[in-house]
Length: 434
Image (cartoon, rainbow, N blue to C red; front, side, top):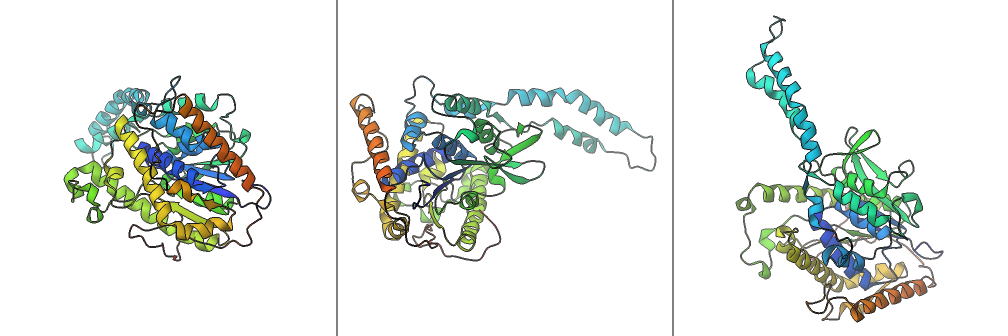
């Protein structure tokens, strides 16, 4: 995608845990099918944050969105399938390290409580002396080593790499340096020697859920702590058309659709986890919107397309991503929702795509029988699998032919993010980044 005369395409994928990864896979399959001339495995620059880092690293290694669906949603990789419990294994080593501290902490607390040697210093009360025991609490509940090991094996296969420097195109994985509270972009200058799988582990180490990832002498946590998308990384790398996928939006029960009948209208009735989820989503959404508006001024020669769920989407908000059936339904839902969004936004998307030598495939978008996942009994084996491979090859051929098209005559900023009410996002001055 970096051929002379051809716009440089970038891809930015936000986080969202297992749900985010599933949504992004379904959405990316729909986008890949609809954008003629785009190959998400050949983007000039790909940026991944948290769960989005998992998908971004796979795409940069040549796994197409359809490949990711077969491997992670349909589990058709029989030799080494990916299981969600890779992300939910107890952090036993972390528990053991913390428990080993208890004797020393207990002795220290007792000594502090009984210490009367300095009359000028107030004596510590019993509960005050116990404060030190907070150091015995584990830094995370689960261990994501298994997921990182899986990626290392996956990227270690022939034709793939676990080394940023060996990739054909730019891949950036963003994490947060815990001690400095600063974003670190793995894959950029000075951070290219870190294995891709370890960078993904660091970027997805959500505090409280996973322990910080130690790389060298530094500890890293989830990249979303600083920004939601870190889209500016791709724009600074030269992307002129940036496709963004954000799987997490706050839920608005007042807007819920007819298909959502029976869902709660008061999120507080659903308990603490739901309240925290809504709070987190609202915070990252508002931050991202402000950042997107800022890009309109800082990168006025680039176009940005944002795709995300609707605010009344109960399936996305309440999905059980660890259920195999729900994973399939959620991915299919993301696929069909993105296709519907592409159809409804065709009028605003087509001029933007045309400026970069791209177009929408209306025949694909208008096909009412198109599905992400084959119905039972019609799985992609045998002839069906060959058909999919042929479709992928034809898509790559179409992309290669499109490289010879004349260069766009102009680039201008065209913010194409869409609000839940169906209107186009308005541009505003901003001080923050997404």
